[in-house]
Image (cartoon, rainbow, N blue to C red):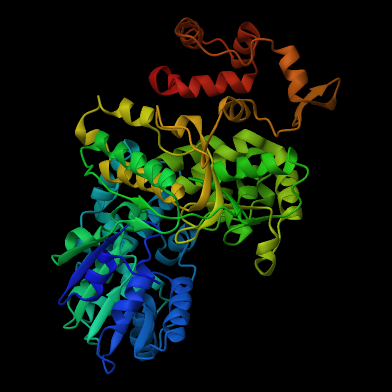
Length: 594
């Protein structure tokens, strides 16, 4: 293949360099050619971001006859050095909240579930430390990672206890009293100040490296090459940092994408302009030279598990012609939180069937309100999503998941899938012929609403990452993209490759609990349970789906303050009780007047 001038400049460079590469710009090809141009007796280490990237890279280097290139991940290097030498036992899934409570024998107080909230913060504090470049836990201020006011207040109150117990749990792992985690042995490897026997070290996906990984990399005597895309950093929640900014190396750029056309490149650049609202944007140039016209693989990409599940429900219930679907990653992972709680546990709590709840944390809750209180004190986004799904679909969930699983095919048959479903985090590094985005990403309107807030009230890093997630999603396509109207930049020129989706129907489904084909809402009538379809509910509540006006909001607020119950308010407004509760929450009436 013919290399670009940008690629040739990198290949012929000397000394430590960093490469800022836009999506689809052939960075792997460039790195392979860079390795080819080094002396044949050079010892070269290629550091991959994860195992799947490692396997793919090893295959490509071997095909080029580059047997002097060793392919590893930071964790695989650490595993060989730390786990083997110390005879540690590894706990791959880590420790969930309940296990930390038991291991440390944490005690509660008069507040609800205090011990579990503390355990949740201990888990996060340890992850923060293990991914940092600090030598001691006390060298970090964990409060820097907490933004929700209620969670921040809780952590401030128990900070010394959380810090002390975090150190105790780390000590137990260090002594081998309990199994160690992946984060722990990487941290121990970093603190051992390892010297790697290589002449060149090539660090891929550098924008998602943790400070611990970077510290290992920067300390080596080898010639160092770090490559990534500043705008593809999406692992800040795992304490990744923008290593390209931290590397004081000669900078090179790869601005030509061979994946997609200029239409998609223009859309990607428009997405990145959203950073102007954060005062972080620097003009980015992307040249699109992709020319694919075939459509073999189609994918639906979402920001969240909830958004993806809602779209999957639509495909299962409405698009009857679609027989085979595939979820990137284990399909069961979309119904489980990292901490072990499942969607069914939250559903059983919703139904007050606590005897069927398997997760000890959820079982300790007496109501959804208690779970909401726990979520607010821990900023547990996964549990928050599960709670949203349960509130949205209730007892339809088992049938929904069953229907999705019946159409799901396994890894070996992925090519047979008529539609692939994935969150952006799970499809990182992948590409598809056609992409459809779910309407759950950051929008210009949301960013504009934040401009009036004080700087200390805004988590700029998180918002920057939200924009990056939209950019990564847009740049997964080789051919065309279907983008919701709410995400589409105003006055973007019409294109045969960029298709705009009207989103009113999507919003209505979210608001009315529609499963596409008239989901059932159970009500008791004459002592027996009767099922109502959405159409029947619409007939009964003629005003149920009209927009709320300021006048109606004021009327609702007055009635709430006067103590009118939800049933009577629903009757008064001609809406469902669920719609009234949703509006009360939206207006934060409980917080203001409860």
